Length: 367
Image 1 (cartoon, rainbow, N blue to C red):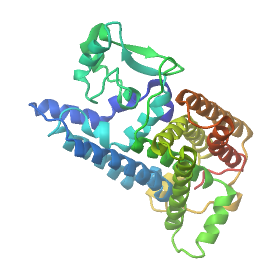
Image 2: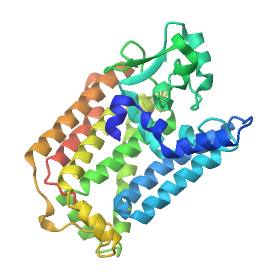
Image 3: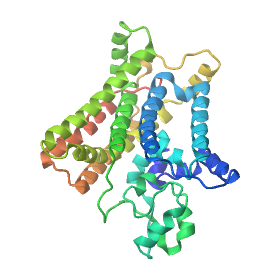
Image 4: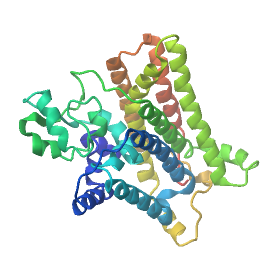
């Protein structure tokens, strides 16, 4: 799914069964519907952020991908949320503000290649064509890449007012879109969760768990506490850098700029870890079956001999990481960060360097 965000942005959201069911419910129960109030929009944004953390920890500590009951519960919650908000309000309120997956794909779509942009009829006509948008956005909005699900409603209504464009260097001729505070927090939390996922597949994780389980009786609790500690470290480091570098300036703005620059790295890391799970985690399918029939417990200590170095996989992961670091450099140059060249290199290069050291470790997908 992260790979699709690179090529087609949030197109998955347009195909999502939960959102489609909400559209169907609105068609069956037709009538005038109000816009979601501002307080609900704010609540939804914070709920999506909390959902990203909760879902990530559920994958890490509870083996969500191998637990049928938990997966079904998650799907039910998403569907109920989409339908419940579709009944009283117009458009896709759940998809726009509440959905954790939508928040993640929206962040990754910042570097996506496919977008809907203003056409030859001018920006006023483009904005007018957006009245049909279920996401309440417009081709002339600076948040377009984050909110647009490429459903095509504005293309149907707008004629030449909007157009579909494909650009491997998005936003090359315009200033980069800014992030909101919640989106900036989302980037750092995603990066932290991905680092936790990569660390739990290395020998140092075995050392940590051996120590943690001498004080705690629960594997899941030890992993959750360790993950939360690393999330706090990532957030604290970013906030600290922004505070020191900005001094008397706008710290919030610098924090959002730094977070935007790290989006390509988060996407590259997500793809690299997906490759690890796909290639090295083939036996995980059998593990999932074992969990379902009750022979195994989801989430367990990997055996000491589970770690290996697959050279082609390592090379591919390091290549993806290098592309992510290059994307960070490109985004930071467009954002015109108020940092000196050496300071910028240290601040933005540190996460990539740390992750490179992790990938150089023998890894296992048997977690």
